[in-house]
Image 1 (cartoon, helix red, strand yellow):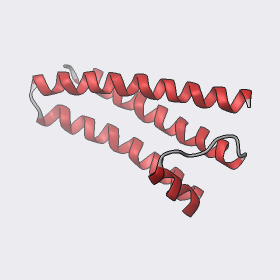
Image 2 (cartoon, rainbow, N blue to C red; image 1 turned 90 degrees about the vertical axis):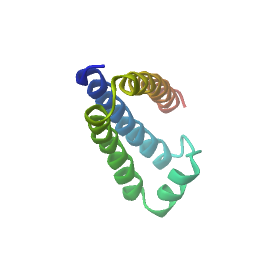
Image 3 (cartoon, rainbow, N blue to C red; image 1 turned 60 degrees about the vertical axis):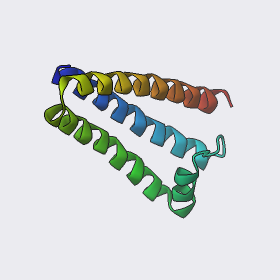
Image 4 (cartoon, rainbow, N blue to C red; image 1 turned 120 degrees about the vertical axis):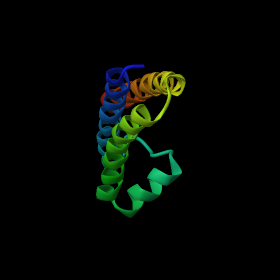
Length: 106
């Protein structure tokens, strides 16, 4: 798979993850949603700023890791990785749509 697909998908996932973090932060601040991920819940309870910092750091790591996977892996693994990124992209799109629904409808 060419670099642009891997990088495009990883950048889109990173963006969706950051938007998810912002939407979750807003929802938690206004008691509209609960954080169900136990690790992120601990981070939120510890410090909302730490929660956002970790979400942004993980987002940037996805793009960084994707670049190195492209550079250091064979074509077959790149194809599998790209398919995985596409599935993750669809999952994050669904999650973001849920957040937007919860935040606007509740």
